[in-house]
Length: 77
Image 1 (cartoon, rainbow, N blue to C red):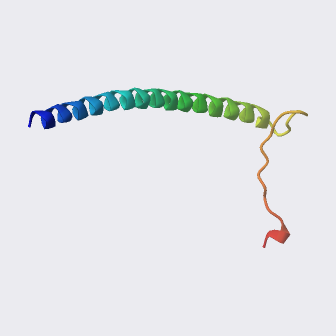
Image 2: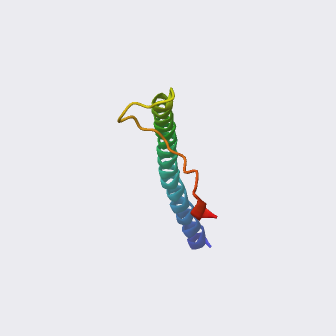
Image 3: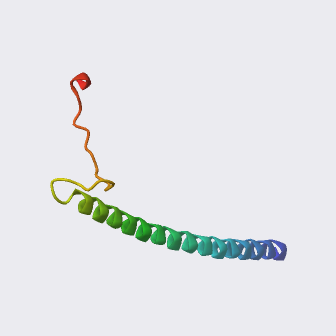
């Protein structure tokens, strides 16, 4: 009976260690995802700012990036 108790204690210790290690990597992944979301938000904001600046006015300057929306053609029907 003492032998089974020792084995259970070893299993509990191994599970605790595994839990701590997985918690560490989970936190690391969570922090990385949070940073990627911040970077994506900033990149999107910069892109929109650049596009709005390029589209401001009726005529864009040569070399400005302007988003062109495909209106389709007669062949699309």
